[in-house]
Amino acid sequence: MPDIPSGYYTIIANATYSSINYTATGIGTTQIYVAPQSLVTSVSISPSGVLYENQTAHIMTEINYFNGSPVKYGTFDAVLVPNFLLNNIGQGQVVVQLNYDHGKWVGNFTVPEDAFGSSQFGSSGYWNVYVEGTSFNGFPTFSPSYLNVSSLEILPSAVNTRIYVLPYVYIKNFDGNFAAYSYVQTPT
Image 1 (cartoon, helix red, strand yellow):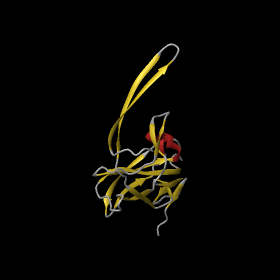
Image 2 (image 1 turned 135 degrees about the horizontal axis):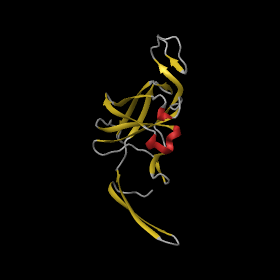
Image 3 (image 1 turned 135 degrees about the vertical axis):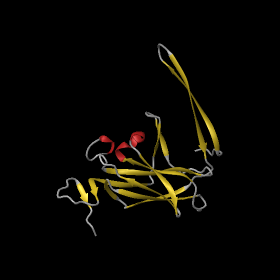
């Protein structure tokens, strides 16, 4: 990768397609920002590891500058994507706004039931968690990514952390006498 000075850049792509009957040309433009350095993130989720549909998890993220000092101001989100929708992130993501609280960026995420209308177990499986955002002074989080040339989407190639969702609905307080495909939390 070449060493590119930080700043804003305009990218212009010229394309020409030739066939026996015709020739088509086009120009595409976009802009990118190259930051002088990126932020360092560390993500944890509580409860960790395994969750159930309808269960709420607490996302805690430490975000620091390259020199180790904490980032207190900026705009950050946790983006959660089921593993089976990784190639269509725009269609299957849940975005959680993170807020700064006592040294950590925090937010809550409730696992959807019947996510994306696929089936009763549509939310089950691995979910990938990515933290994205920018500090108030223009430093972004680092997100290794690649371009999907079919959809022209930029897709992440590494996750900050992941959770596993079991195909059962979480019920905290149950006062009935029958529950199917459910995890009932027993009072302690």
